[in-house]
Length: 444
Image (cartoon, rainbow, N blue to C red; front, side, top):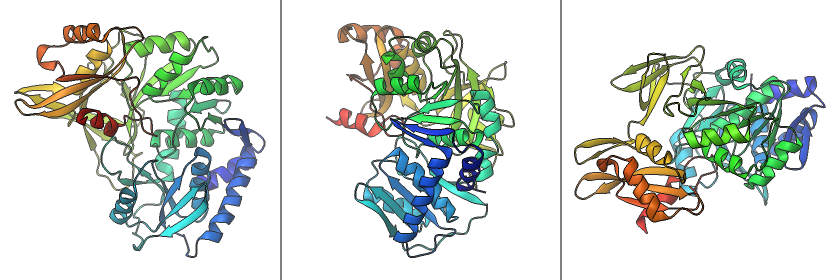
């Protein structure tokens, strides 16, 4: 089974139901599948080799073209791997060589093309139907493979917890190469829901689309959620559920969400590309510990050893050993909830004192007058390591006053070596922190 076959089934059972709203374009389940079939004919004309059992990269500039190629490639029983936007040629070549990929489809303004790689196809031990790229903020992404069941087998569980129903219209934004977006998109397809998205980053247009199509459920990472709710002028009552992850929800963002989306159940999840969803928390109390990422999803077991979180789940990428650790640090509280303390590498030893970047960042975000904050490690000639902070201040707040407030909120040893003020925190196409752009700011 693969997702082309699932879409084919849904195009029959939900033929005229709207499946995808992209800006002003509307595609029913049948109409979208028809576009997929046209794309498969196009693929047949540009390739000369049999794609069966091939692992191929997919590069497309638009959401629609990403989606079309993702499904079309699977008709040939090949495994599509959606590329992140902005990767340079050497990164793509490295990904292909390291993972023995057979080729890359490129769909842009010039049309569709296919480039073959000179690597022998690897033998898959499992019935994998797709590949995904890691979506971290640094380094060349790695390829991981998934069986159909490793996601689809969990959709009934996650859809129940996130509130995604057959009658839902789900809004999300960003590249399908981000596994969170791809998973949500396929979960909506699985249950027969509608999906609403936009190719642009104009938040006012997002709001207009949500209102036009009565989106009742939202999936956005916290950084994009803040942009959304700050742009909402009149509270939107039609949204009944939103789920988010990849970053912590600060108290200030939670208050904004509750005010602008008053009827929405807010669910924070902790997950990973390698493992799918791990824990979840219903966020109701603004005084809650923002590090609390909740209880394990049904069927998921968590243990902690030497401060590291280990996960045992049947819904993981192929070929990993369980229990698996992402080298995230944390502990379980008395209520059986996971308290997340950041990645193992997100700690610095500053002159003999171990400092959690996650904890310092949360303290800074709690300071009145700061919309967003990011804390990064830097090398220091004296202390060996130090930290710097990037702050997005609220309008009208003096920088000198904010520096003083940050100093008062932190222990002396936690005070950043330098504070940079930005208009916005830069994000990549997956909604993750564009760390390379911040590092350029340091080097100026």
